[in-house]
Image (tube, rainbow, N blue to C red):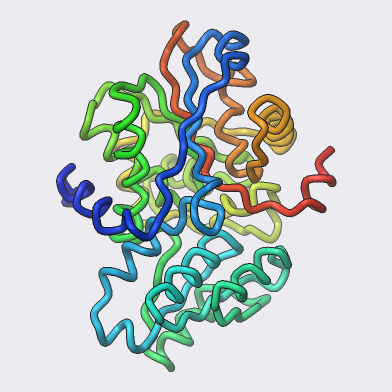
Length: 317
């Protein structure tokens, strides 16, 4: 597999920069004192549409041919990618169809529609439904993670981090299908191979961990295996992302549902932000001492999104 150079990532960042937010990085003296580290939180929950996903979606759409743009795009998603593709498509006057599970959050469904997406709800296999529409309507797939343009767009986050933090010891990134951690980990390793990259994955949705163990792409029953981190509930790992994770991710840490809820509560109370469970997952390894971290180590925690409704938040506490 040919991985892109650092200059390629820099070019992509420049290309998408006028369409997205440069999100803040914040610290908490209380957190640093409590855990004896130098923690930095990259707040992608303040990104357009409430998550990092627009970076990859915008980059993918900018990469399309004029004919592909004319025909339109399609995506599958339970929420964050759906909103990102709908918003990005509308930005460039491109029609989009978004296949979502019938039991997806109503808030996320309504948000996707508000961004201009034509939402198709289904209780069937989303990829099968998507492929049928592609065959009939010649739409271009904007994959939620297993796509080079999407992965490269997500890598722009690491470049923003490195603008402010010239060195990082440890990086914590959530894993679903692996698009986010693929782009980010590669950029960090290109910059400095000694930076440690930790993926954080729910125990109830550990498709990437299973794929690493078997050495091949594994599927996962997201109906039987429920997790509050719905945006990490990938039905399969990516063929491309698996190769990135094998090469650039140092370890994957599994976290429980209760651990994610406790982390969410901690971040609301201490950082005064409201991340979704998938984003709160990233702080669990530090909060629960799941790994050994040297004192005063500089740690980057990627708070990937904040698309969670009030009713869901209330149900956790």
